[in-house]
Image (tube, rainbow, N blue to C red; front, side, top):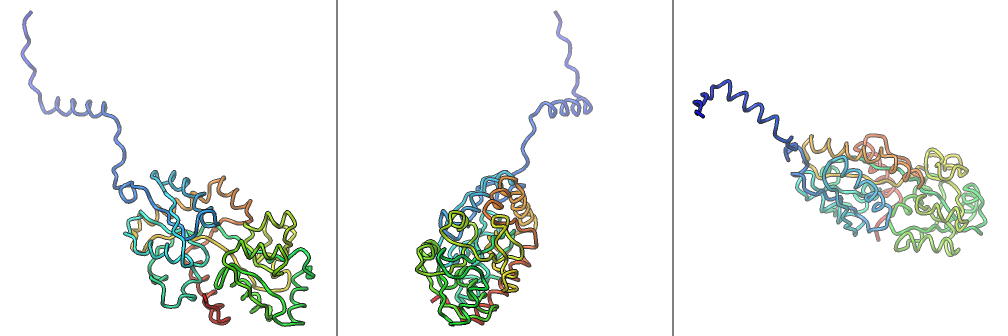
Length: 331
């Protein structure tokens, strides 16, 4: 058997051979540059302890965001100092998208409460990525309390100023501010009783030590349904699905009393437009998930649908005015 001479590898044969070889190769994944921070896990820093409302929302959206982004999103709790420890950590973070903040409505209150003592400049240190959901407060009372409506509360308060007390989870808390705004709009004087946390405050209202409390509807719903506290009005423009028979404050006679608790998601200032848009889209996709939407509505809330940056500015302006006019401090 004779050997045939090798056929010269012409340019055309080389191109054809290369094309055939490339078709046989497996498809490679997209380059790492398309991922955020090179594809490493993203930290979702929560400003409050595990088990609270902010933590609940973080653990609800983290897996949905991870699915949308194609990389891990890890919840990290950094509580303390009204959320400013976590906020400060994210404000100082490298702006590559590897760290986000999930805070609470105190984010808009802290600039007024802390004055110039915050470790960051709220207006310029962050990139808003979204606001998750809006949860109204509900004015609740001890079941045996003589007032059967907000009109009764106003009548009692006007007959004897400062005779009625309301509890809160602490000075400058959402409940304190809700009470202060109520006093301002209704032109009444109540006595504020601050506690170290919402749990002890709610316990004393249920026990009859303090008659009134502006409770978060999500955390108080079970107690309302069991009859341990009685609802008088919700602090939203519309009635909440969870308590359809409870009037709004405007319906009850205190026009304009709208106090919502909410959770913003923010990155540090300096995020590129591409990273900002990708993270914001992941937040929106997480909140559109049927499981997340169902959970939020079951807790008495509604998914936010507006402009996050504008909402944060309006909330900060509102609470700055209330804190100033009512002389509220953290002490």
